[in-house]
Amino acid sequence: MIPNPKYNDRLPSVSFPANGNVMTDNSGTDPAKKFVKWSQDKKVLVTNQVMTATIDGVAQDFITQLTFRLSDDGKTLTMEEVTKSKLNGERTVRSVFIKK
Image (cartoon, rainbow, N blue to C red; front, side, top):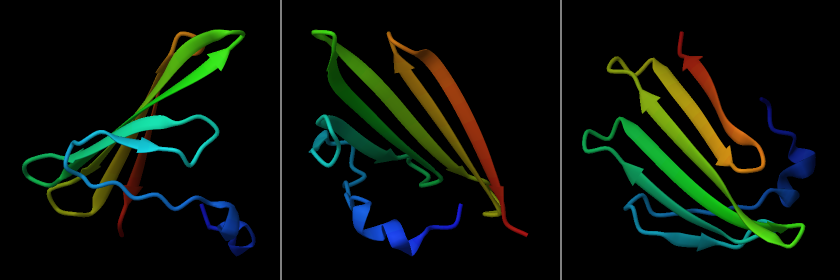
């Protein structure tokens, strides 16, 4: 994806320390709790987000986990996104980026 500078002013800039501490993110429509953590070998970064939204008067959690893995040779980055909610069930999307 190539970023479009026309929309840069609309993109929120939020940073979180990768220490596993839970932080609150108020940049979206509904507040979310996030935590980010590196694996011990620093090759896997995992972000977790839990957003609670009220739909038809019922509070529902929407959970997103992003996992970034760098291959041992540093040439392949794999991103896996797992989303879970009662409304939509569970979905996994995996993207692989290869450096040539």
